[in-house]
Length: 401
Ligand SMILES: Nc1ncnc2c1ncn2[C@@H]1O[C@H](COP(=O)(O)OP(=O)(O)OP(=O)(O)O)[C@@H](O)[C@H]1O
Ligand SMILES: [Mg+2]
Image 1 (tube, protein in one colour):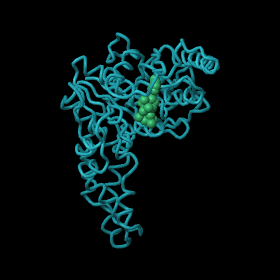
Image 2 (image 1 turned 30 degrees about the vertical axis):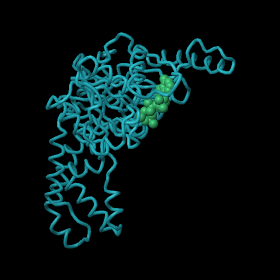
Image 3 (image 1 turned 135 degrees about the vertical axis):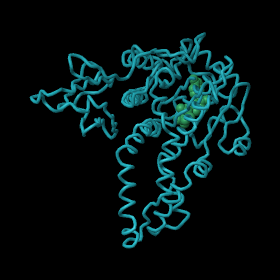
Image 4 (image 1 turned 120 degrees about the vertical axis):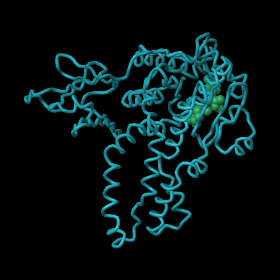
């Protein structure tokens, strides 16, 4: 079983590279699905498929060649299948606030529903061994970052919030229903959330197991794209996902000597060198700018040849772990690779058995094992690219930070 995510800034070539990788895997005899949340349905465009084929398929996998399926999710379809009671509650909540029904239904498509639906598929495909390889063409960065935070946020939500909410609704519900017009969620809602969670259980372990899941970041040799790639890199590390390759796309080929492109080539070379420094030791695979846009099976195969040469695309190209918890001299230390950050950018809070790491607007809850949670002091240091969090025993004198 192998899952590979392809992520990066808008327009860098994610869909093309994901499709090329899928084709290579399928040709190696692995049954492969390429999944996408993209509402623009570029996956079907890139395979030059008739739109109507996919519309008829209503978000289910569609076979495009031997061993290869593509799946473009259909939000409405997913809501009907997965979100019934939760969706009903939320839209009733919104319509009692005075919105008309249609608008309330629209708004009840919560941010994250599509992503959670995708996680449900991944979990089921892995549990039922439906495919050998799952390839995920992520949405442009902003959205895909929300996606990676979902499994850990859900775990936290269920453990910390959900049980409390359910208890409150149970005791306060009958009274509140008489006093307020706002509907209090009933058992249907809570059962549905619980069932959903049950079906998601384990997906976080799958996504953070580097033996199974790795992330490949697509980038271009340009200032703004590279900056964004560094940011994404750090966030994937924060959520404990393992990045095993960077794909540097759209490099001007060496034989272009036209004066018009001279400065372009020069600046591209500089950014490529910078990228090597930033991302080392993770390998960077280079891809030239093609003569034409990349469309159809044959041109995707050419792309796969450029990216992987003779290499097996399912290999893990880099094996470093993004974070680990170790015990040394009686002290626990959580070591997390967070390159491109200074200590000042990180905010830490420990609340009983959880550690909250905040970087900018991103927040990661790390549930701590019992022995670690019992420690009285938490201290952070930055060691090179690694954030080290020291959990002290009973040495009260340590600085909090
Ligand atoms: N190396 C390349 N040479 C020439 N054209 C390319 C190359 N890589 C990608 N393209 C073209 O650039 C366009 C955008 O590529 P693609 O759709 O793969 O990007 P994306 O990152 O998935 O975009 P989005 O963020 O919109 O989903 C496509 O028309 C594709 O054919
Ligand atoms: Mg795309």
